Image 1 (cartoon, helix red, strand yellow):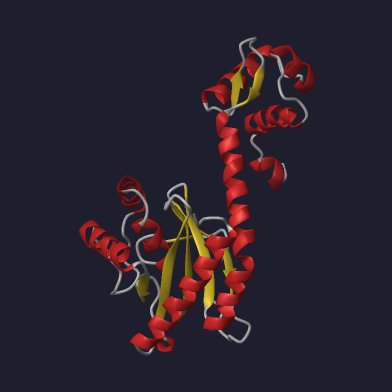
Image 2 (cartoon, helix red, strand yellow):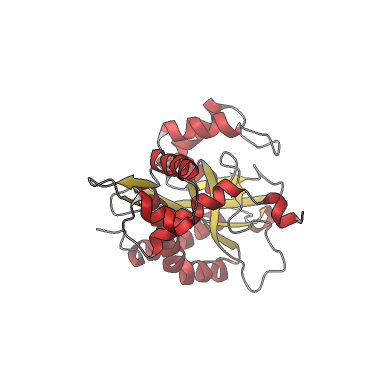
Length: 257
């Protein structure tokens, strides 16, 4: 058995084969599906039942199968992320060049903070270790704390329960009370600072990107070495650059009323 066969899960593949039928059909009966996939009735029934229970398929009044609500929710998520990446691309690159720091956009997805876009300045000899699509800690990064600050308290509590508050540096927040105090401060001042809380000698400034309903969509940030933020004036300058980039993205995305 080769590696590909070793990791291949037959039941999942059968489910995928069934869902793929709906690329060219809006509705299919049990018999229609069986004719296409050739599974025995017992196996097919169990798979269809499971897909229906998880809202990947649903039945119409005539008992025919069609795509369920959760398929559309997943599709909309991909569409939303893609739209945000396309809408922010030029402004994120511009922010990286003007600030001289690495610029990121991140979101909360399935209780994780994910980087969906990143640009390094062309004149920088230092490459940040962050990667697009890779999760970062929520409680000790600029991206993470911003996203937590503008998320419902129940989401924050779930993230703490699932992932804990691991200490990475002496500056890392490690208690729920301290974290909630920090999140309240972030909401009041409108921006986040990561003071070497995840990585030593690294600073990050982040802002929320809110939609036209004043709801959280993403976070935008810049990250650099501590020595590159020598005084209050340097923070103020870069907060303004972030605000300008954020406002351009919101306008491009029609997130303004």
